Image (tube, rainbow, N blue to C red; front, side, top):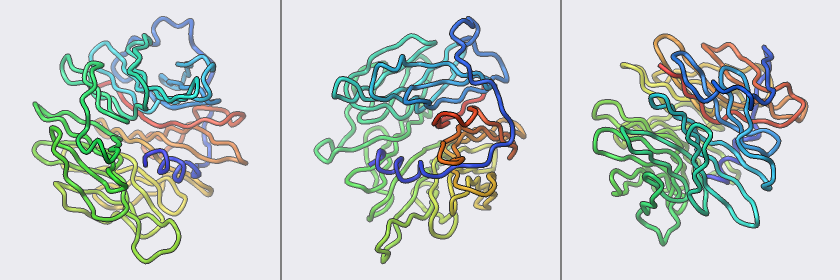
Amino acid sequence: MKRLFVLVVAVFAVVAVFTSCDDNDDDTEDFWKPQKGDVFVAGYSDDRAVLWKNGVMQYLTDGSDDWARANSVYVSGNDVYVAVMGWGSSDGFAKLLKNGIVQNLGNGWAQSVFVSGNDVYVVGSTLWKNGVVQKLPDGSNHPEGNSVFVSGNDVYVVGEVNYIATVWKNGVAQNLYDGWSVATSVYVSSSDVYVAGAEMIDGYEEFVLVAKVWKNGVKQNLTGISSDASSVFVSGNDVYVAGRENFYATVWKNGVAQKISGEGSATANSIYVTGNDVYVAGVEFNQGISVAKLWKNGVAQNLTDGTRDAHAVSVFVVE
């Protein structure tokens, strides 16, 4: 389900404003040493998983696979974790990188990584805790996890079961909608659980989505038709959601939409808020080429030069 959803939303992109270095930075020892204020962005370019640090790109895979992508980045203390998935040797694979060192998780795919204390959680085709498989319930129905968040002793996962948006709390599933839908991101603040996603509108013959955010299972429409929500982040009393509305990369703050891309097709894939700064990772299409983008407070930066396809999927700011 997640793969279908990515194919649908990946056709959208935004207008470039600034250009930054996208050369491989393999010789920089400090790349994997996070400092306060560093901005990490995970994604892919030329069918290879990549990670940007402050606009400088490093390949995470060698190109020997059919394709690979970095779907999530998380920094905890002095360690940088990246969830990677791909396809090689006629099978899908999931990997976790810690400071550039690869741990093979097995067949399947990895969508999201979250670190809580000494425990590292990765979710995708299943849930891994410290590299050990923790099966998602409803296994016979092929559940798919898209995002994981840990709050205290509680582990939250969102995804789909039989094309229905679902949230699991400590393995107990709750459907968020009774029709075709997707849950893409989860964030827990105090005792409140926020989930971003989308529902398919009833009565339409075509594939039409409406962006949603659920708070403790109660949904809110973020906009009209032809939209989806990819990421949710809570800062204080403010709820931020990143996604797409009518081909524009969009951020909703407390339900109010702001377009952050210019003319053309664009989508916002991930959002991170620290202090007064709002960071968004996404993608644009520019003359048939997908360009990885990073917006800070609505101002765009190109992460690639537009000569090769690239997507920015996840953003994390070191505080």
